Each structure stands twice: as C-alpha cells, then as structure tokens.
Image 1 (cartoon, rainbow, N blue to C red):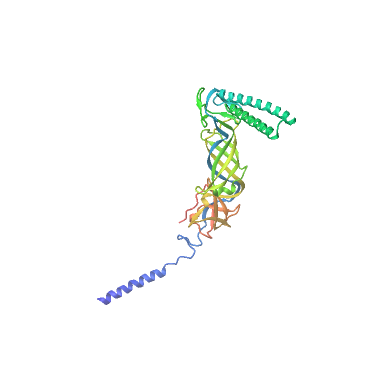
Image 2: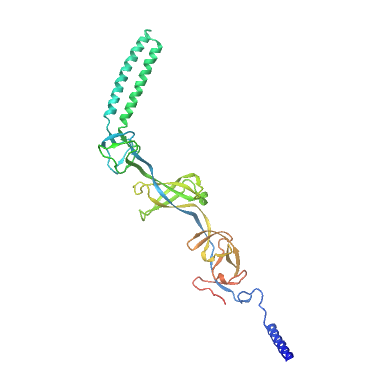
Length: 358
C-alpha cells in the first residue's frame, strides 16, 4: 500500500516538470507582458519652447505718504484762530492755527526797549572810550550787556512766532482736532499734514529673491479699495539688513499719486518682475517625479529616451526647465506610463487618445 502511494506521487511530479519545461520563457526586455518587438507605443508629444520671461515676485505692503507729520504746538497756549479747513491743500509756511500771543508780544516789547537802551549806552561808551574817559574792561562789559539784550529779543521774537503754527511742507490737512478757545499742550495733535503727491510703498521680499532686487526695478501695485486700477512705480531703496526671524528684506518703492487716489495706510499687493531672460518651458504633463528626482521622456528617432531634468518656476500649465533638455526637442506629455528607456513610440495628435497598451 505504501509503495503504491509513493509511485503515484512520483508520477504527479514528472507530469508537473514536463508541463513547466514546455512553457516558453519571457523574453528579456519585455515590460508588463509586452515582448521587446511589440508595436510602438502611441504617445502625444510637445516641443520644448524658449520664451523670454522674468522672475515674478508677489508681496504685500503698506502705503505711506511721502512726508507726514502730526501738527502740534511747542508750548501750552489758548487757540485764538483756525486758518485751515479739513482736507485743504496748503503750501509750506501757511498759518494753520493762531495761539494767544498777548503775553509773548509784551515780553518782546520789553526786550526791545531794553535793547534800545543798551545800544544807546554802548554808543556813548564808545565816545567816552575814544576820549580815554572809559577803560577797556568797562567798554567790554557794556558790549556784553548789549549782546545779551539782543539775544533776549531774539528769544522773545521766537516765542511770538511759535504762537502761529505753520505748515512745514506742501500737503493736505487732515481732521481738525482742536477748537477756538481750547487749551493745547506740547504734543497735542492739532491736525495732520500729508504730502501724498508721491506714495511710498513698503513691503517685504524673501531673501531667496534678494539677488533680483535693485534700485529702479519696476513694480505694479493694486489695492482692494480701488478695484480695476493698477499703479506703476519703481524700487527706490532696499533695507541694509535682512530680518533674521522672517528671513526677508524690507523694500521701498515710490508711486506717483497725482490724482490723490491712494491714501496713506492702504494695504496693497505688489508684483515685481526681474530681468527678462530666455527660458525653456515644457508642458506640466511631461514631468515625471520619482524618488526626489524629476524626469522627462524625449523622443529621438521614434525612440523614447529618459532624461533627468532640473525644474525651476511653475507657470499655469507649464514648467521651467533649467537643465536636461534643449529647445525644439520633443517630450512626451501623454502616454509616459507605458514607456521605458529605448521604447519605440508612435507620435499622435493631441486630440487623439494615446493607446494604453495591454
């Protein structure tokens, strides 16, 4: 009984071995069951093009006036007159507010009277000195008193001038924050004064784009508060330091604002464009990422060649190639999943679906 069972098992092994020997071997070079001599793979290709492009940088910033101050008084005093209207355009030196000047003028008049007396004494002293009736030291003392009285007159005159608050530059006034009869103290804001003929736009740029920044670089700015309008300007200054926390640098641009549409404090988006240089571009579908590297299939003499490439910027539907392909070469954009190095290909029009293979 045991002998029969052993003979039956040996017979089964012989049959399995013969069946395996009769199965043809897979030819080397086949992929997914496709023999090396199979029909060409249908693919869609595109030509590597070269176009002039500049690196674009997007940023956000805040609009600032070309010149901006809070108009204040130097001393505590009573407002006697207001010489401006809110939103007025005023010239440099225009009187904005007048303060009570009675006490200051009285002090000036007293100082001027004392000065006049000192000048008379000095003239008489010079005559006496010429007659040798006055010593040199006495003449010097009288002259020193004269100079001190002149200084008192100048100081009193300055206090009188301070009772008229004037515009420091051409600009537009803001809201009035004082009234006639009100007491103002040093630091009390009377109004604001802004020169908005030029708007300074401050924004930050990542340090990775620092090499692109330079003075006179053109910018285009937009504000959500002014839809459908764009404002052109240029970079005027770049900060001397890079922020170690944000790893960005502060940039300042200037925008002409002749119509006064832009206001200080506006939030604006900024677009900068670096120097325009020739750039190689391929369709986004041609890129094959694999294990941290990037590849494309280039068609040469109806044969697919796999190349490693280095990519740069990504544009809508396109990718910049900085190394690995040349202009006018053709890359596969559809059908890459069926390709390997050396595969024969058949190029089809983009509107025809590429064969998926079996």
